[in-house]
Image (cartoon, rainbow, N blue to C red; front, side, top):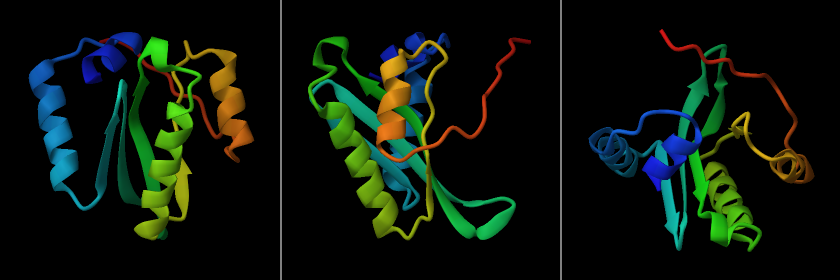
Length: 125
């Protein structure tokens, strides 16, 4: 699923790097890996660099197989991330959507209390 997410994001997946990242997240107290039937989410927690009293949980990767979408798995992943964030004392959650994400992803985040914060730009060098 990590490779599928990478391809969807327009990145060049490397299976070894993905496996190392997932192992690092699993071994870390500041990382979360949720895996379900055709779905996964990876998140990390860290103090906000401009105010260390704010603990942020940031989603790094989020994937639901195409045929499993609209079945509630995305909401279950979000609930899992939010529950973990609360349990570790986080004050904020940051979710990311690919530029290619359909409009319903934006609606999903907004319905669940998220507000847009910034846009991310990417350039190949």
